[in-house]
Length: 137
Image (cartoon, rainbow, N blue to C red; front, side, top):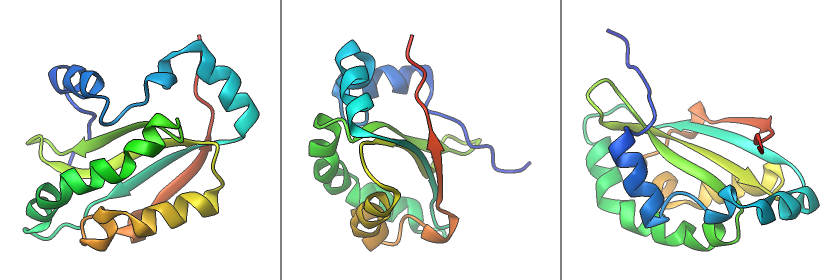
């Protein structure tokens, strides 16, 4: 069976949202609509991890540093949403993020300087950056 990437399970999602480690609370508020309209474009970003057997161990070893380094961007609502991609065995195999208020060049710089890149977790040759628009209801 091919690797199936899927978003974090319902249980893990609620834990992630409660911890505020991956998602800006502003993402869900009406005030973020005004700030996003003023700040510019939004981008959907997908990066797969390297596929060597040690990659998951590297990811887990550096995960807290990665999260800590991104907290301010989450608070500033520059990272609107982030989650791990999982395979059919629910092992982390990549990441998806939505950025707002930054240029594509700024996003690339942030990703290049991230702990996951420096620690050979993210395979930047798989990087996909797409212009996006968050649905607001």
